[in-house]
Image (cartoon, rainbow, N blue to C red; front, side):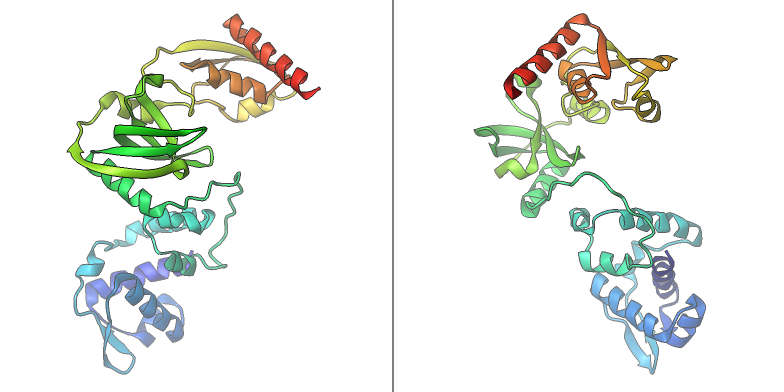
Length: 308
């Protein structure tokens, strides 16, 4: 990531020294005078500042304040390069969510910098950036909000406690507490399905149980304030390698490995294991509790009857 490192060195130099000449700077960074001119333009555009020329090819920075928030020590350069590596793997259209200008990111992540390719399922396109700004403000200051939500029908939630914006399973969600008795009021609301919100002036206290749940939940089907229980499954040897290589739920634990696997999961919603078992049919069987295997068979029979 030579370019990103060079820009970071360039910014650090002008913060500390205030003055520089393009030819000397080019020699220091091992690049060209033309490239330094491009760095000047990018820094001016991004930070909204002007580097003043005091003689041909030489500039000075009148005010260091706009740049001081990113003063970088040499030992930190590698960490910043790792950040840019992560950006290189990301779709830059989502960088807008982080408040970083797309144009600057695309300049930093030129073709030479794109060493990595992250191939994932198609992400949901997040279109409601103005609504997102309002949600971020409400979450930060713990303002109650009212929500109009369009799912299978239109819902209206009032005095909602917005807790966190989540990106899970390829979609954007608002984690929130409502007065709906289902799931003890906890909702994962798809942000693209929110029609409108109204931010109230009243604030709410931090809900510690909800904060812990957000940190610990296994899937979007995890139940809020419900007791957990153990499930055991058998996975046949044809697909066992996938479960040795990856945990499909964070609580997955291998109890026995004789070619076939015996696995345990700790869940608090039956759908968490039923959805996983459906995905791996016919190679997964639920051992305990037995009624979940019976439910799985009912789902399979219903699918076959509907299909044929």
